Length: 439
Image (cartoon, rainbow, N blue to C red):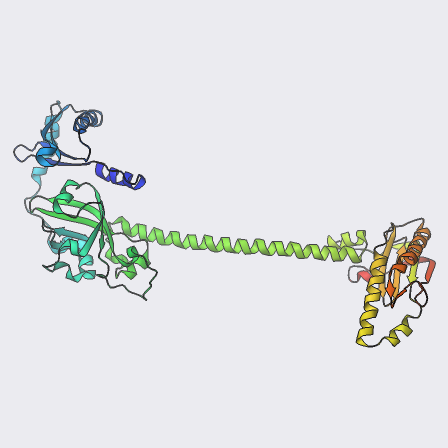
């Protein structure tokens, strides 16, 4: 498993050139031979110390490690490992249990091809001798004599030349093969946005050397992300055997994608809800401003909190009614569109000016035509209601001089503003919940 670990570390640290290890048995006596491949010279003595420490700490064995072939002799270093500890004989007896295995294989090639639908068996010339049923179905020309495995697949991992000897020197490494582009007929509508990996089949697995036939067996699984990838490549979930964890990974990925889609939709809906809430808050502020602009503060607060506003009795209040003298005649003389616009502008300027006057305990009730109505003493009782209305009337006379119509002030000549004061007893017998203007 050391080469597989180095291969995984190479994904984390790009450019890492890790050594490779594999073990064989010496034919004469079955002694263990460790093959060490490395581009860095002079490290074989460090390997001896590491192997001895591993044997002692993991297995409690005292071993002897000798260099039997150098890199100059065999393009890599070979070590002879001999176990000299007391438990060596017991371990050799455990290994001798392999002698009870039958000499002949109890499974036919057809059954093996169904059991491992994704496997390849090839010789030193890289010609395929056997393939799993699923690979044979989607690559029907895999058994052609003029085709080698190099003509059908690219070696993605590890990064090396695709030769039989290189495979033997990296036998403990995870291998990834990818079919040549165009060999597999894709199902479904053509999509030019598909990547190369999505248009081809990736096979990930392990290389196993078969010394009895001098072949290499590549036991692998399709590297796919979901059911869509299987369908596009002409495969089905049933092509993956039950014992293969790839089936569980595909189903888990489908579940993850479904949950991810739900999460994404939930985030989108949350964003929309938050945006709607912000718009609602903005509209509510506009409603509040309008409510407080047309109703007294105490009444507006009750209505905003959806509390009932019961009728109240006020013993004495003072009301102000103002109007423009000759307003009806002026309207008759300006009955065209231009005149109507002039009248609307005059009233708007006049009432805007009146509204700008700030007096405590005075509440503007309503404007109808040229009539302007204000009251003091309600909705909050005021003992000086008449004085407050009087001050308002005087201020209205003063500010009306700033409103100019046809070159004249509204307060002069034809446009005079009379005021009326009344001390009255006011009682409201209706509810303000349905019609606030009843105030």
